[in-house]
Length: 356
Image (cartoon, rainbow, N blue to C red; front, side, top):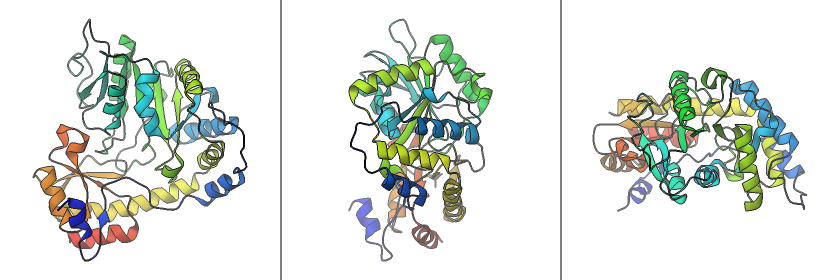
């Protein structure tokens, strides 16, 4: 029987901790703004409204210590769309190699393949130089390097020193560094830092792009609300292509995004919800024999009891708890499972009772 069906058959019902889908309400200020912007018969601006770009720039400065010109902000139809299409939009060619994390959200790999390029995985912590990127040769360019901190699935946070090495390595070779930072406000033991922070990039955003999503911060996964920022020349280039490709965020969603980015109170409230869930679920897993690795930030616990990941999925399914097998995120994850903290308080509490 499939693992989900086994878990669903538990007398207490399914506890689905396999996905990172938000379950909490969309903030009232966002719902109100969306309704007020509903009468929107014209085409939206691909570049985003001035109000949205101002709000995004304000959020970056206020929350991340990053200063950008609002002109260098570009809304996207969620961050997954951007991750999947960025290699193509940047002109990555067949035969090129795209560096991705060794353990990663599968869309980095998919995006490289859409462009006809070859994904080249690295563990993200080895010293940056020829060793982790042996793909480099006279016949094989490396035009794009992805980093993801905090990581999905592991919750690992890359320190500023490591990110500086990645930036230096890429700039020496003319590669773009794209940093997926959609969990950046969810640091627990470690405080994440943006690729665009002066401590990382030396005050220049040349060759750098950062991707930010409102799905986790503001429960806007259903709105497909995200944005890209960084090197103004790269952003302008992407804007031009996206205009012709019709990659436009609907105007009511842009208004809702601006409201969400201007309001920190709801984000703090949501962060506290996740903190509470994490505080009870982690010790319950550890008490049941799972070791939690990394998981210093983000919305997942990267856990292992020493057996193969599918055996762990099966064992937890018998308790009515569904988790994601680590090998979904790369071969290096075959001994781990990813456990999301995005279920409701009631379902998290149910999981805790079963683990005990």
